[in-house]
Length: 140
Picture 1 (cartoon, rainbow, N blue to C red):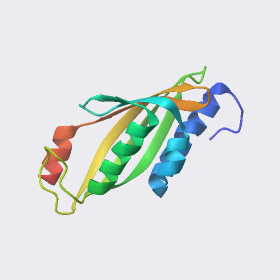
Picture 2: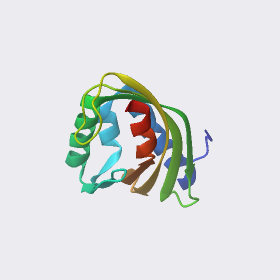
Picture 3: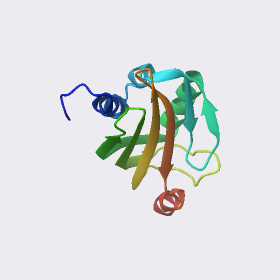
Picture 4: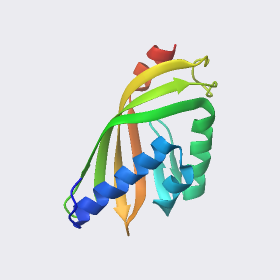
């Protein structure tokens, strides 16, 4: 990662810190990087708003999945207001998630990506994408 202090490098550092906190299981550190009114676009799902909604989402996820992101690549616009990330999810499906196949500890490997809006040094929007049908095929 670059040591310069440009808006672009700060955005990359912010998103990288977000994913490092995710991989450590440090949900409080993740939440601290979000704007109070963060917008979260769930993959093939609804839009949720607010840090509290994001925290509740993470609790639901942590109950059903154990995930680690690898091969993370973060890119950002020159003005530091937008960023994108690509990664590979190494996961395990632990507990049934509503509307999805039954869980019995199935392992999965799934490419994914996310887009971010950044405002005042915090993440103001997270939009996640992955291939749900690929995941279902792996755990089904």
